Length: 293
Length: 293
Image (cartoon, rainbow over the protein chains, first blue to last red):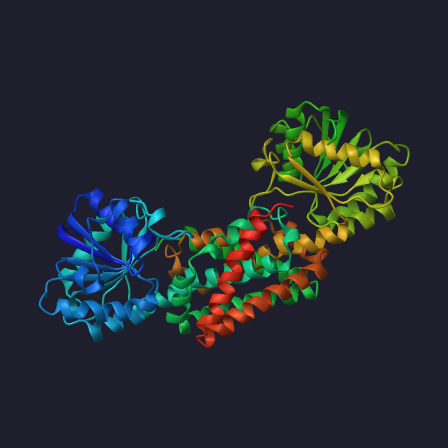
């Protein structure tokens, strides 16, 4: 466990739900003196300022990073390489600036950071397991990370002090568990526990919703829950699907195998096979949700 | 809207979550003098009695129905034909006894009732859109149906007075909307809004849970919600899948089409196709959950 760090200035690039919530949490924890934000969407960064998360609005990612002690990249993962390129020049003269991100996939951004940043040992990939199907600074809240797990993906050249500081950032924000794992392992695991469920929910909501408006009002809570994450942000999830293609395709294969078994059981009225799959579902769900690590 | 009916004796055959909750709701509403229950599982019927839902335990389905004014069939749909056969003899001399059920599929039970019951005009197929992923009398509650929709599936020979009385039963139990539709139409709709989501959730939970215990603790709320209904009762859902095979296979086809599109989009890194599917998911979910009828 790290002691809470303290920062003179924290910059967030991408003032959506997670970026804005992190600033609110760090301010509330009293571990930051000043905050600065940048977002390509001007309305979003102004809203983040109105909500008290940001003290100063920057005009570019580079300007946001120019005087920060910690830079948090919180844009959709598809834009992270571009953002790294924009902040790299101003970081050349600032070897002590910590950089982290909150992206839902890690292998690509870690590789990009190593390639693009002048002092890449200061970069620590991060991914707080927290989020909502809603997005934007309007739903940000200081308690978003309380009790949650944050995953960090250090690599061989990561500065241990940088890792320790980012670890402390998430504890200060309220996370109760910080787990370190390799970027590729992160992406493989999250493909199963998060990306696959989103893919399933998107396809399900599209299939049911495409059928007929006549189904309105006949859906029980089961449909609402099962498709809750199908309301998730378009650009964020498009980028995740693009960034984690290989691990995700493997997870999709696993789903298709179980799906195929269940479909065959239904088509052939095979009650025993249905039992096997439903029992596997019961056990599997319990294992994932209740098992400790 | 029907005025609340009043019954001297209501029998429930199958004292699981829905059957027990219905008795609790009707007792609370003061529309029943006595209740009787039967369940092949003795522990379940005793628990329903302990919870105050049942005044008297019957030793068979026939005995339960012998003196009732309303008989509610609340066993898994796969056993309904058997139960109809068991109560038919005692109903021959009781042409006024109302019979209804709470099964999640309707075409088969309605056809069975027409074929098996001596006074089948008194049978009204029913399906309250309420339930939990938990099952059994231990989780029953008098408020389970409050604010919910109940679907009724009368056919040409259904006695209008019987229909009106069963309508009133559900309003008395707290339902705010009672919708009548044809049995086949019910099954086609529910295949999409309920049975397909369950199939998806079972396959997803089995796929993710089968991967590795190492995923424990890395699942966000999305996985928990998306697979909540994967914890649903084995026998109940096996029976639904068997009973609604044709409509369900059609719904599975719809899902597979959307799934196939999304999979191809991921495999070919087709960002535009991903956008199309995610937008369809957003719109579809909203249409189903927010649209009125």
